[in-house]
Length: 249
Length: 322
Image 1 (cartoon, helix red, strand yellow):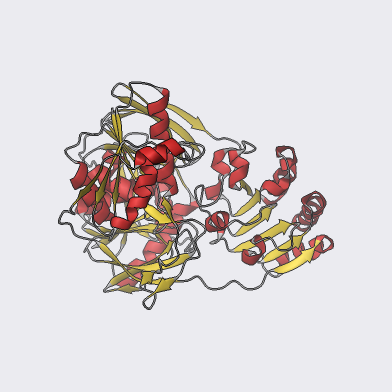
Image 2 (tube, chains in turn blue, brown):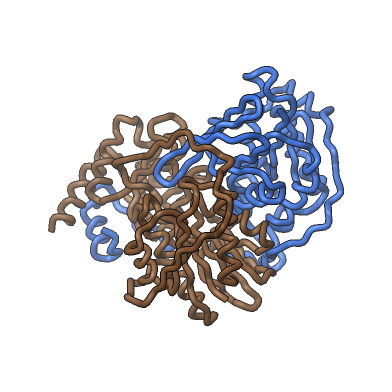
């Protein structure tokens, strides 16, 4: 089986978010870039499956849409255990544009399983996976929290409102992955890091594609008022405030 | 032109998130001189369907011929056929599990610009601009949609619910004429019973590492009981297996926006705050007066949970009984 894991690089989750150019662009100066957390978990699961069941997974490819700078993230993915990588040499413009680029880059590669993260820690679009499934005309299941495969069959668990469902599907198949798919992201070992340097990384030119949306402006949330603090003797007073002032209870 | 709202049911019943979607759609309909059409997929009684009218739907399209579980492709076939039939120009869905599964497919199929996790009604209609949360609640972006058809998923509890009003509503049973044989097979369903779901809860009581041990959770459970609240936890707690993963709130878990969020023994890591910052009111209990959770809290108690929680429980009981 061939697995494709779609990854993007996002600011480290502890980044202090700032904007520039009259709040029309994200300030990237000083930002640490990491693999989007859900993509990293997807990749971890793909590598786990490859390692635990010899012969099941022949190849894990990662794909990203991004400029040359995003290759640091790609190398990390290769160090974690992907076998090769594709980078579409374009700045991600919107989810539709990104999904179009990935679809174009992989449509003839016959992947059996495609994994995408359910959300991205930057623009929180929750969109690329579903769009890609549609563009490649694939069966998709979203909010997947466990994944197993054998022969040409996958079994997934997905979260539903108030529970979970176990679903079987035939490959080719696209899973939109959330927490639970792997417990901790795999940390690359020194050997993986060394090997990553020589693994194939193919750079492809972007295809012609439109965008459907555009970010006009960013805005910071309004500053919160000061916290009204009490010590343990003030519990009654706090509850009175919650009842009478805030009308919360 | 019409605004189409996908009104999802859970076992034949509508939840408040659906009424919020309709309230949101009705405001947009009033501003743009259009009307709200609700689409229900699956078996829902007519009497229940009619309640959608009380929140703004003028017409309800009921598609009963569909798989009983969510099949992304087939549901997209149904929804897109109704979009075309009603000549909808705006499609509104909840930013929940099924909205996240369906909206991108609809967007890609019809080349309709998608705004996901919108937090307010459009700030302008021409150009069409909607505000959404980005960087997990650390900022907002104003998204301009370039296409004639727009798809919006609404972040829960970001708009509110209008008071129900009786108005005329028509129900049309519609056969979308799509192939309903799913290529996926549902082999098992596990339902969480006997507890309030986080997505339905107005009040949420949450615990973190400061709770010391899973054995101390009864203190939070008792408080949640009295408040009619849902239970949540921070990431280490679900990673340690003290609580199930469905209770994990934060960046990689659930993003929630209850009316009242009570955080006990949670230091307030930025990833956790991202998941709760849209709450209307945050109360933090922590023994460390410098814990970052107090920077986002409206009210705080500096003290040890073993001492504070029993007092809090008594005080809340007194209020509830008075």
